[in-house]
Length: 344
Image (tube, rainbow, N blue to C red; front, side, top):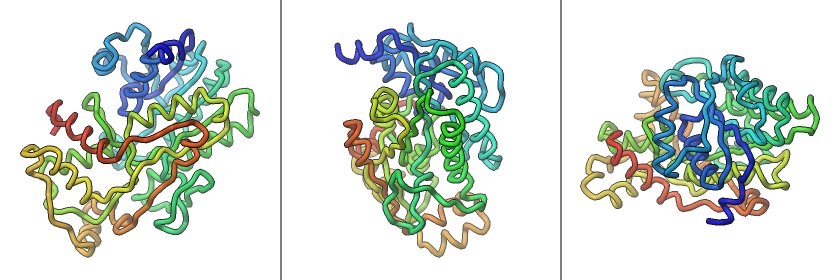
């Protein structure tokens, strides 16, 4: 599209966590809109992999360069930020893989602080930081999450991700208060992201679908999430980056609430024989609560049992013209991509 091609001409965006699920889609969208993109990766050995993922969507990665920079170390951040017009800080530890069972709060805070310091020193126009709807939850379970709310998170281990996202976002606003408004800041609070994966480094949220497809889950616990497509969240970050009305604002990116049984029904209905291993029967709450005493995964979901926690993206729709595609589309496309890439 001509409008998209002109949008980012001669503008440079630094994207942190470049190999990640959201970051890879954000890089794709930025390149489609003619931005020059710098991506940070923790290990330079991943550059070829990320280029291949992105090129599969854009055809070319000529305007994409890489910097080796780890959120938990100082090296590389000043060089990565120098000359950038915008920074999209998407890198954040998740309670999966190498971070499972480890401290999330320390890396989340120090990583956010490093990026903000580097961006400020480089004279970046605006930084957009990925938070989470988990940082804007009401005190009453089931009430609607909005940008005016801040989560009061327990210090219990099962709530560590929630606390990490809340404290890291608060770090952004503390930085603004301390350093003034010369560098603009905005935060984006995605709901439970689904949508197609570009490679094996996908979000923990998509692992829910992988588990359903694998047949490893014999029954379905009574939990659910507000679902949003990763491609729409990538678009929301770019809108938050460029819109004058987005400066110093929080924006929730949410879609529709789905129970896990709804995920399962979508997969069975849309995948035919490939969805044959998706469970159909429910798992009683008392079984989950009992199992939570011994199983970390069940302990993590037990507080969500029966809670229909929805969020509103009215602010993003009104101020930024943002619109989310259907949750069913996001779930189906995530599953199709996992199967096509033999990741299940």
